[in-house]
Image (cartoon, rainbow, N blue to C red; front, side):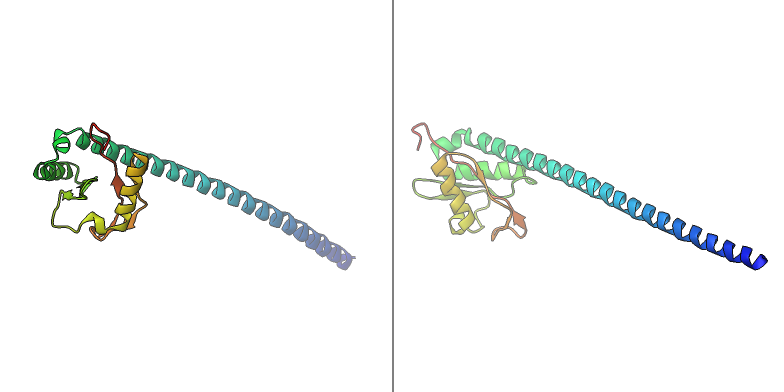
Length: 171
């Protein structure tokens, strides 16, 4: 009789272990799926937050460049177009706004004369990205900027901003 009780005990124990193992495995799988969902949602929320912050930064940067360009355009040196005054003006603005704009150029639409804040650097006419942006800015009469690129002027990635300047006769 004890052998029968022992045999029955072993069967009940085995059944209990099997049922418990299946339930435990189900709970683990369910917990794993929920953890994956929570981590995926957190990752998505973080990516959206980072994209929003980056977008705000780029908007602020572009607005700063527009304001900087407008303040340069409003200066009377550009109206009279004396190259030495424009060079001094661009150098002053470049030094004042060094973290934002390190090199500034003024390209005359009439004679394609280049005046820059750092005249020792290569001309922007030889720079295909700036040439394309200048053409777009002149054609559409608005502010344009490039994607980040490696510039032959700078040693790191850079952005180019272009704004057309018109005189009173809209030239």
